[in-house]
Each structure stands twice: as C-alpha cells, then as structure tokens.
Image (cartoon, rainbow, N blue to C red; front, side, top):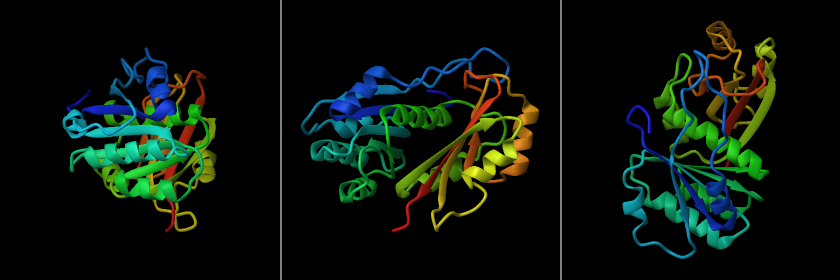
Length: 238
C-alpha cells in the first residue's frame, strides 16, 4: 500500500492461483527516478467453490486485479464473484488468458473492466503495470481520476503493447495510436514504462507527443537502459 491506496491481486482457478504464487514482475530500481520498491498488493489465491466471506475479504481494497483462465466456466464464475464482491467505490480489473467469447463479455459486466491477453507472461506484465500505477508515484503528471473513470464500466477491453527506445518517443506514440480513437475503441488506460536511464527531460518530451490524461508515465523499471514500452487499453466496441 502506498499513498493510502490499498491493492489486491487475486487468482482464480488453477492458472490464476499459479500467477499469484509467481507474483508480480520484479522491476529495476535504485536511481533517482526509479521506485524505492515495487508494488506490493495483498495476494489472494481463491480455492474452488463459493466463498461466503469474499465481500469481507475484499472490503478494504481500493484497486483489485483478478486473474484467471477464460476457458474455465468455474473460473469465470469465481472471477465474476470477485468483481461483484468488491466495494462499490473500488476499481476491479479482470486480466484473463484465453478466447474472448460471450463468457468474457459477461465477466466484463461483473468486473469494471476485463482485459483478455494471450499469454501468462503478458498477464503478469499487465497486472504489474496496473498495480504499479495504483501504488507507486509516477514521474510527472498522473491524472488518476481520469484513469479510474475510464476503467469504471469499461467492459471488455483490448490491450496493445508497443516497444521502442527513448530516442524515438514520437514513433512510439504513433504506433500505439494513443493520440486518437481507433476503430471506435475508447482509450481507457495507457502506461509508459521506461528503462533505467530515463531522465525527467525524456518524460517531458513524451508529454509533448502524448497529451492524454488516460496515459500515465511509470517510473523507470525496464532493465534495458534506453528501452520504453507503451501499453494502451481500449474499450472494445459493442
């Protein structure tokens, strides 16, 4: 917990519980613009079956990321139960691997936003981005209210991930299309992660190319010194 924001990372089903055991990505730190420590959410691995005390277990959290495999009906049901059990003023984001079918659409109505990704590695990476945003200070401007508004009722969302380096930030923004609405898909959340050689001037240049309050600049965390990665999450058109 940082700055009064309580976070939880919840795993449902076999795949979700395995991700909780693995934990979040370990990201670099140690310079003036890096976090002193990584995000440290409460880790909850839910067993199969209904848990009548779920609402009480989640009552203290402001941001909940729940993860699992979409192919399992039981897992989807458990993830939906997590979404419904969260406090009304909390933000719950589901991160699932597997096909984006009607079951995922129903899950998107239970959680505030659900994001299908292709692999366990991407699920771990995106969960780390979300929980880092919620619990760590950013480099410069962070309009968290805009992000919360976007994720609240986002439904099913698609995630794009573009990598580059800090010498070509304009190209990174253009390739991720974060400066515009793409195919009717509203931008809900964007996260820029830098390499450990980032400077405040790099972040200021990025803000010149991308003046979107939904896009936050994460403190430096990537191992490659000049690397940068821009993740954009957009609401899928209904």
